[in-house]
Image (cartoon, rainbow, N blue to C red; front, top):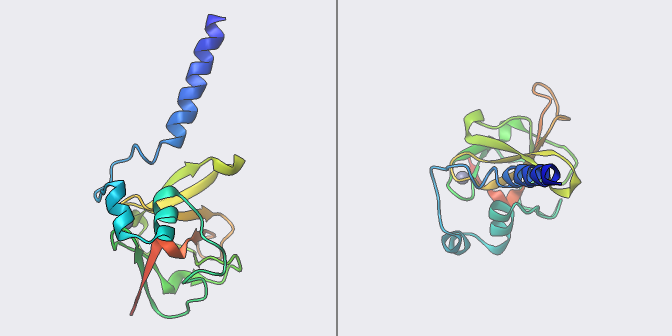
Length: 155
Ligand SMILES: [Zn+2]
């Protein structure tokens, strides 16, 4: 019986550390929840800070074809470029690579009963979306990003 209890504790600990992997990370830009709420709209806060997902198609940048740079809603770090944006048909802005690889961090997201690779801003930890391996050449990756986590700077 004691042995099983130990196993249960280990399993509980493992799933707990998995879920908290991002919150345990250290980011250069940090703000209190009150500060985040003050600087972001309700939807931006829900998506960027609570790992939410905005509605497909009815978002700011899905259909944006202008040339420019997409920066982080939380800290203005340059994340994606219009040069790498493609039509995925999913209803969310999609890119086959980040502008600078080091600016985008990843964790394993085990919510919704599946393992997905979550992507976030490497400087402030804001949730951006997920990356999948069904994108176009040359990377074969599809960064499926929420418009609510981005700010577009026209070039
Ligand atoms: Zn950021």
